[in-house]
Length: 362
Length: 144
Image (cartoon, rainbow over all chains, first blue to last red; front, side, top):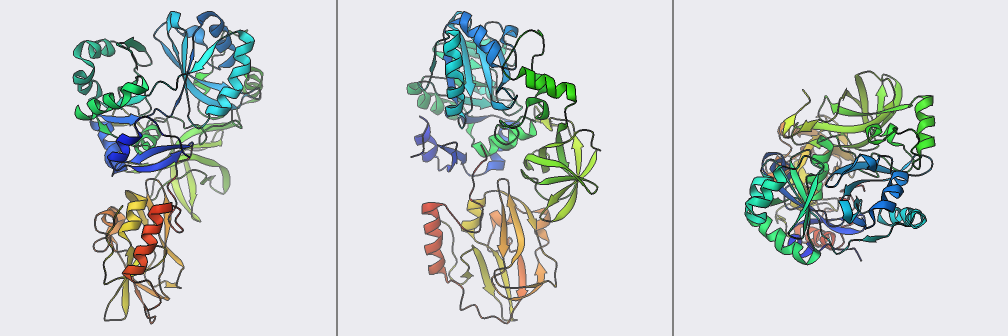
């Protein structure tokens, strides 16, 4: 039996096309995936992401030591209200999951992890947390709603009140505040302005209704995937997993090498890979022809196979196919992709493809 | 999900529709049910005119944002015309699957008796809705 979030009845009533996502019944789209994509780029969209795993560590001191060992990014860079994107690595430097950690000051730290990886994440974290004496609990009493898009904050005024929205507007990206029993973070997975709101499960349906009434249009995971890909954001399980390090997944920027004596799990393996020379690059691709790029398609530099697409799609904003790919280091700008036996030209580009509604690719 | 299944057409189990013409040709497209399952179409790979095709042979590919799916020829024959408008406007298949969204025209000597009629196809479409595990269209599943 698939798991259902507290918003299941809402999207079922809206006639959503449902999809199994990591054991959860989630909305793929509510009619038009492309329409929902444009809605987020141009106005405001609403995503139920309550399937994600939320874990609270309540004791700041031992948790700080724990997280400095557990995570490749360094929570010493945090201060109350600040968040950090990081990888959770195994000893070989492989990515067990990617997550966001929030510093909640005296209340401790909050981790938001992927839904599909929940079991292995908690099995990995639990014994290490115990060693550090850091108590934690899973917050399945919290839901999570993402309001994303250039008009998201304006539309939230009737829902959260002008005063709260004014406070949210003072938050820089990757910062959070807590007010009236809501945890509100200026984070997201779309490349647009917006917030992720964590209400108690019991209040989530009413909050959803108010947000929909305020004109924040429900959007499915399909649009969430095309939005994150345009924004050049990785998807766990497609773009990286336990067999790939952050260094070959475009996530080198999330690894805190300094201070050099911080011995986080996976550090030795990453240092070895860095010293030997990182063998692969993680790049953006744009298809120069008609067609759609998909995961696992092979990339060629003339006759030489140089790598594979890790995730690809049709970009509604650019009206052409785009992809993230892992290729041999030092490839040329013009490559080819094999689509059903035909070699079509692709261009290697800098990420992201789109940011704040604007195409960054010519 | 209810979908349109015109009574005058013939169908395949792989969700193509077939319209017979007096001149010995048939027009082929994908059903309303199929376009619903695929979602917004963004690309159609159309074959070359003059290609000889066998029944059940893949002869076109329709791609939505989430999946690529083969279109199978319902009959033996020769492709005599393709819908060039789909190159620029693949969404015609979503908007008008039995009209402007036609995919190709095949000259054939085959009779259409062996193909499904609307009633038989409706049974297949309803069964799909119940178990979602369909044969020729990629089952929409996001990769975690």
